[in-house]
Length: 101
Image (cartoon, rainbow, N blue to C red; front, top):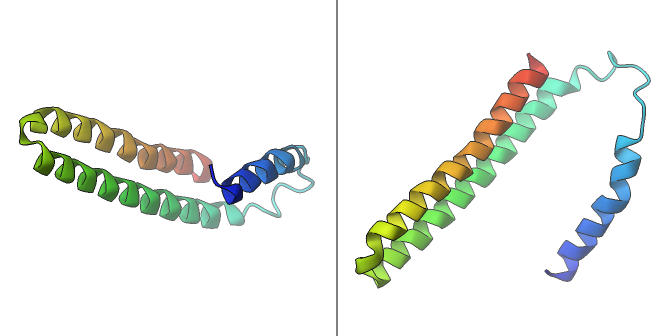
């Protein structure tokens, strides 16, 4: 883990009790930010899933090119990985529908 990542993890661990320990004063005042933040979260989730799927497909294609005999096992692992990656975006979509709707 790089030094920047370690500092980010430490910052999140320090800041999380302060973020979640606050009590909301006026629920309706911040209600208009929920759909906007939902849109941003879906955009981030879709973008990261797209990058992860591209990297998985590239690695699988390289693996099959290097070892054609293991193509069936690599293809199975690729499909399983793609399903799990895509499920992250779908979980985000479900959470958005529950939160906004």
